[in-house]
Amino acid sequence: MKIKIICIGKTGKKFLEEGEQEYLGRLKHYISVERIEIPDLKNQRNLSQLLIKELEGKEILSRTGAGEQLYLLDERGKTYSSVGFSEFLSARFNAGGKALVFVIGGAYGFSDEVYGHAAGKISLSEMTFSHQMIRMIFFEQLYRAMTIQRGEPYHHQ
Image 1 (cartoon, rainbow, N blue to C red):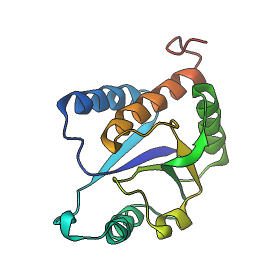
Image 2: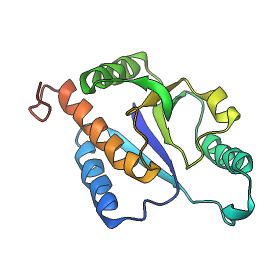
Image 3: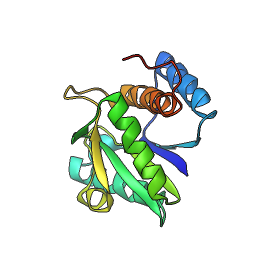
């Protein structure tokens, strides 16, 4: 199985981009990971929040396919410990399918259409982080989950 991570917009901060690349590089030793970056919409200032979510939603759904399980990183999602997230991933891997797709949305969240296609929602914290920061945090948690599954010493309990 493969993991796809769909992100809205650019990170824009060098230190975050370096962190993303660090963990994406580490993940290659465990699983195939594809990061898909959807560019920010042009002239966003002239668009309503609803229209922005709908246009971003169409782009998100156009990059998902049959047999792929879609999970949204959403503040109202289920929270996991690192071990719990590792177990979640193991269960999804064992269930089969082409890919697990995680989506890190834009500043306004997701359209109703995207929520309708999602198999679930995951929250990384009750706190709010910028969607640029969430990328690096999520990539690190994916890496941590892979090391937990292999019994490697990265994660300490």
